[in-house]
Length: 480
Image 1 (spheres, helix red, strand yellow):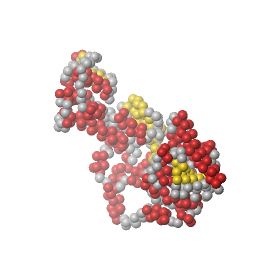
Image 2: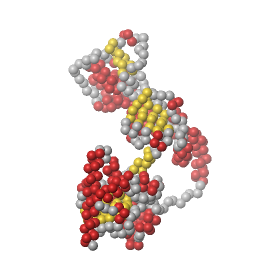
Image 3: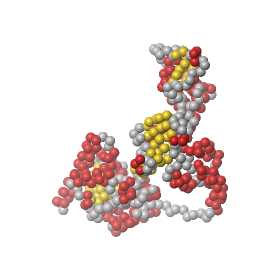
Image 4: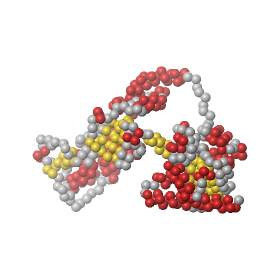
């Protein structure tokens, strides 16, 4: 009997190397015993022999599908999985198409293991609930989860991507995953006593859960299948589930008995009336007041307020950004955050007085997704840009600038009414129906560049673009 000792429960590379060597030595599956390092040998350990270290020079191939299947199935908790996988590998040498026989016992068992692992991974993604530990800059988000299989390392990248801007830890009995904003790390498992049980957002989450619970669509068996009761004890909303289910029948009856409400008026009516209103009568103060009540697209629902343009009512230059950021959304003014500060500095270096420029955005509401306490900027879609474009058109008609500067791709799409590549069109003036346009990058692009040299180089290009605008203004004044 050959004894194979793997480093840990998820040591796929160790299993793969050992299985290849075993197969090349023609060692039958029944003559191999697999254990994980740290496990005490049984009474028959003396009969085991160590696998030869030098593998023969020969080689063999198995389908790539098997490797992918084995990488997932090996995370199953069944202690026989290593032996089953080697038996399937052994048989694949003689029958390369074995995986296509779904009814084969070994194929069916390994496939079922892989499905169980993927199902457990999905449950972890769905039922991990972070709780805040500490406040403000010292805050950290901690969750407790009890997986069925060895899936923590498999599932962790999902959380690193989804919660990239908040430091978090997922504690489990076997292994813990941690994210510091740069990389995922792992430490040994801990007991549940180390996991937090409450945080300041608990009541908010329960209120939200109660508000989205729809008794009219409740199917208890389907819900319990998707969210088994064993997960309830770790969910903040768990205390509400049974009362909500019990109340569902009464609430559904009340909903049916309640008089129907009037449907919401289509938002296109507002957009239509806005588009066809006479632009000649507009002034910026009137536009700003109207835009404060804009409902032409859904972005108003989550934004703090409309962020309208501001500046001299007869400015020669109209700067168009993409959309408000977090700071702008809170202040109600365009370009007051980090990107605005960079814009101010670049305008000054280019010889343009910011106070004499009208500044606005293609989209007037902040689009974002929440990540803990952070609101991450999201790029506006084409329908959102189109819904907001009439405001830009009315600003343009009211101000009548000599030059429009589009900062970024979203702004260029708004100004030209179509998708307009930045690099292809920057560095020179472009004709509009009335006046000229200049296309350049948005200053937030410069802030996102990780390399200091690239940031300095691109900032200088940005200033050079703005100098084209400054030169155009000087020539316009001389001509006037």
